[in-house]
Amino acid sequence: MRLFLALIIIVLLAPLAATHDPLATDTETQRQAPSGEHWLGTDGLGRDVWSRVVTGGGRTFGVAALASSIALLPGVLGGLLLSAAPRYWGEITDLGLNAILAFPNLILALIILTLVGQGALPLALAVGLAQIAPTIRVVRGAVVAIRGEGYLDSARALGASTRRLLLVHVLPNIAPTLLAYAGVVFSYSLLNSAALSFLGLGGEPGVPDWGVLLAEGRQGFRTAPWIALSAGIAITTSVMIVNRAADQVARHPRR
Image 1 (cartoon, one colour):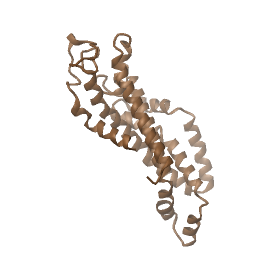
Image 2 (image 1 turned 180 degrees about the horizontal axis):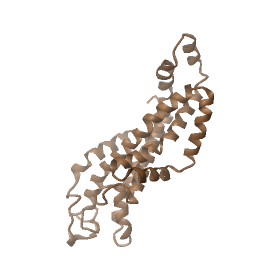
Image 3 (image 1 turned 180 degrees about the vertical axis):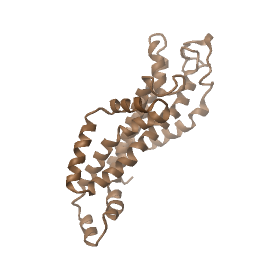
C-alpha cells in the first residue's frame, strides 16, 4: 500500500521533474541515446523522452482513474440493487451480463470508442463502460456470499429496510472485496487506455501519453529502443504496484 501511495504522489509531482518542454521538437537531436542532457534520450522528432514520460503519466493515470470511476459507481450500485431484486430479475439480468461478458473488455471498449469519438474523455468513457458488467457480477457475488450471515437475519428480524440492510450492513462488509477489485479495475483501465492510445484512438498523437509513446517507439525500436522501453517499464511497474496493493487489501482487509 505504501508503494501505491508513493506511486500516486510521484505521478502527481512528476511533471515538475520535466527537464524540457515535452512538445518541443528539435530536428538536430533526433533519436539520441540517453545522456546528461536527455536522461532517457530523444524520440524521432527530437523531443525529450524523460519529459514526455513524466508528463504523460498524469494523463494516463487521469484517464484510468476516470474510467475506473465510470465502471465502479454504477457497477457497485447495480450489483447491490440486483442482489436485492426478485430472483427472476436476477436470472434475466444474468442473460444480459453473460452476453456482454462474451466480448473481451478491450474489444467492447474499442466498439464504444468508435461510436463516441476520440479524445481523453471518450477514451475514459469507453474503457469504463466496458467494465461495468464485470463489476456488477463481482459485487453481486460478494453480496450473495454473505447473504446467509446471522447479522443480516438479526437486522431483518428487527425490521431493517432493504435500503438499510444494503447500506449499513452489506456494503461495509463487502468493502474489502470492493477495494481489492477496484485495484483490478484500475489496472485494466490503465492497460486498456494505453492499448487504445497505442492504436491511435486516444486523441492527438503528439500529446504525451504512455500508449502514444509505445506507438511512437515501435517504428524505430531497433535503433532507439529507449523510447518504447521507457513507457513500457512505466506501465508495467504501475500495474504491478496497483495489483500488489489490491492483493494486500484482499489479504489484510483491516489494515
